[in-house]
Length: 418
Image (cartoon, rainbow, N blue to C red):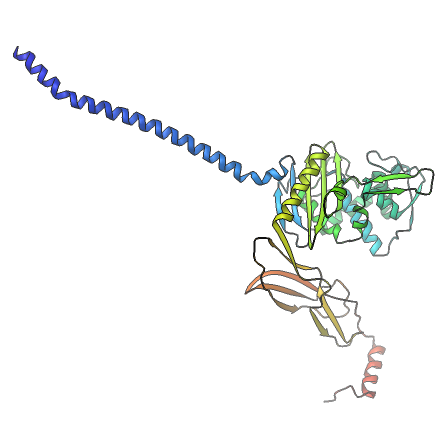
C-alpha cells in the first residue's frame, strides 16, 4: 500500500513536466511551420522582384535583340542583347545606301547617271523591282527601289555600277563599318540575303542608321509611302514602302526593313518629334505585325520619357580666329555636329558653360578638319565635348600672292615696321 501511494505521488509530481515538454514540442512544430511559410513568402517576393526587373524587356519581349538610340547624341536609351551577332537581312542595305550617298556628295556619280542592269543583278531573287537584263534606270530611281521596296536587284546593279562587281562593293561596305569602329559586323553580300559569316548586332545597326541619317537626302526616299518607277512606260511599277510606320506613326520618316528565314523580321526605324530624333532597332521578330508593334513601343517609350536640348547647332559660330599668310584674314569655327543634351523629361533644365581650345590652325584647312574643341560643362563637371571645324576651305598664300599682299599692305599703309 505504501508503495502504491509513493508511486502516485511521483506520477503527480511528473505531470507538469510532461505537459510543459509537450507544449514546447508543439511550439517548436508551430515555429517550423511559420518559418517554412516565411521562406515561401520570400521566394514569391523574389519572383515578383525578378518580374519587375525584367519588365523593361516587355517593350520588345518577342525580339531577339533591340536598341533605342538618340540620333543626335548617340546615347542608348534602351537595349536588349545589343551585342549579339545575328542575321540582319535587308538592313544590310543601309551601308550600301551610305556608300551611294557618299559617291553622290563627292561628285563621283550623279542622280541622273544611267545604270544598266546586268544579268547578275536582274537574276537576284527576293525583294525586287523586276529589272530586266540590259534595262537602264537612273541612279535616283535605283535608290527609290532600294529605299522603298528593299530591291535586291537595284542594290546589286548599283554595287556593280560603283565598284565593278558586287564582291568589290562588299569590300567597300566592310571597310566603311571598320571606319565606324564596328567590330561585330561583317558582310558577305550587299543585299542581306542569308549567308554564313554575314551578321551584325542591334548596337551596330543603330550606329549605322545614325551614320546614314547624316546624309539628310536619305529621308527624301525613306519617308515616302508610295511612288512609281517606269512611270512613262507600259511597265509602270507601283512602289509601296515596306516600312509601314512612315504612314501610321507620328514623325516616322525611315529607315529600313528586313526579312529572311534566318533573320526573321527586322526593322531600323527613325522618327522625329520636335528636336528629338530617335532610332529604334528590332531584330528577330516573328512577323511584320509584331515587328511594327514592338518598334512603336520603343519609340513611344523614348518620346514619352526623354527630351533633347540643342545648345549649339553645327551652324552656330563659336569663335573667329585670325590667320596669317592665308587666302582669308580670318575664319569662323563651328561645331562639327549639333551639341545636344539628352535628359529625362522629369529633370530640370540646367545652365552650361563652355571652354574652347584651338588645337590646329595650320594651313591649308578644309571643312570637316578638326581645328579645336568645345567642352561643355555643368558647373565644373565636363558633360560633353565636340570637335570644332571651319566653315569653309582656306589655303595658304603662294609666294606671288604673299608678295602681292605685302606690296598692297605697304601701299595702303597697313604694315607696322619695327
